[in-house]
Every structure is written in structure tokens, then in C-alpha cells.
Length: 133
Image (cartoon, rainbow, N blue to C red; front, side, top):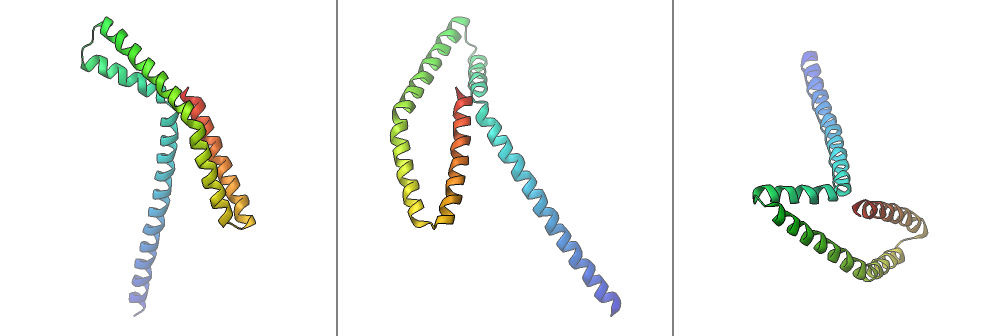
């Protein structure tokens, strides 16, 4: 009976250990994934250039074709940026209304915490936007 109790205890300890190890591993991998996502957003210019170089290679473009296509891609990017700048005020207005509605539901402590979360989120977005330029 004593051995049976010890065996049962060992099985439970192994199960708890495996569970904890799985949790630590999952949390670590999630951190690496999110770090990688942030790094990717900072390298959009590099990704655009890599896309162009792959297209150049895959299509076996001449230098003249590559120059013309690069010009088209640059002009189009500029047009997208202009459109985004034009639409930004409307997006911001909708976002402010959304935030006001959410704040209206929260108590004062929750509002303070919400404001901190939003400030962090906005700072990250501004940093990402700066790095995309």
C-alpha cells in the first residue's frame, strides 16, 4: 500500500511538472512570436525590396524593365501613402468615438487603466508608422 501511494504521488508530480513545463514553453514561444511580429513591422521597406528583387529574378527582367517597374511600385506606394493620409482623420474620428463609448461603460479605475492601455497602443502604432517611412 505504501508503494502504491508513492507511485501515485510520483505520477501526479510528473503530470504537474509536464503541465508547468508546457505552460512555460508556450509562454516563451508566444513571446518569441510577438517579438518577431514587431520586428517584421519594422522591416516593411526591406520586404518591399525583397519582393521587387524576387520579381526581378523570377521574371528575368531586363535592367530597363526593372527600372520601369521599380518606378511604378514607388509611385503606387506614394499614392497609397497619400490616400492613407487623407483617410487618417476619418479613421481617427471613428476611433475616438469608439474609445469614448467604451470609457462610458467603465468605472473611474477602469477608465484610468484603459487610458494607459490606449496610450501604450498609440505609442507603438506611432513608432511603427515612423519606421515604415
